Image (tube, rainbow, N blue to C red; front, side):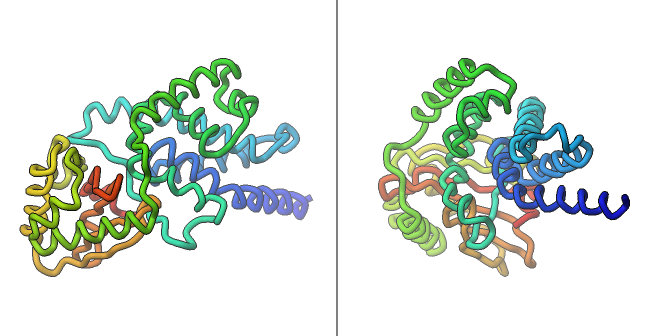
Length: 294
């Protein structure tokens, strides 16, 4: 009897581990927080362990439902917390270097971009869940309806609203990974050299810069808009940088980004959105709580 129980426990663990990357992928895109996503996935595992195996028709469907519903509840709570958040809120940067994720999920890196995650913040929790499950993870309407606990008709309406919101906020032309790296590298070189003309040449006229310090690190409390203002801000940041910092180009949220380290610890992560060969948006993460995984 004891051996049989051990076999069941081992099977549960193996089934769960096979689905862990997918579950984390859903939770992270829902919440924009790797720490919260990991907590959600762990809670889903505990519920899976406690459930009657005979009541679970599909392990994937069961775990996806638990993770999505927990994420919806967490997102509702998080939105209230963000009302008192100091300064601008940005999603937690996530390393996505080769080998960090299964090939089938690596193909979804566009849905990990900071620009995309920021755009998802305009959706309510149900719209966000329906949009991600349908547009990113390719679930059918029947499955989505069961997962979020709504009718198929309600899910179709939620998806329509979400698509309209996302479409209105998305640029028409996306940069390739190679173009992004090239433009972002030119941007960094101009910043490092104090080259104002070179910097203005690589920034879009309506560029926006957002800094997240969370009240725990110095940061601009409001987004900065316009080429001149953003250029001056970025040059000031690099000019005032203390000696001994280490600069690491790496893949963050599916695109080339920069991690700045001091004594080995990440102190800043800079991400960008490149549109039509120009830097259209910049995000600088300074909140130490969101840099620990880096």
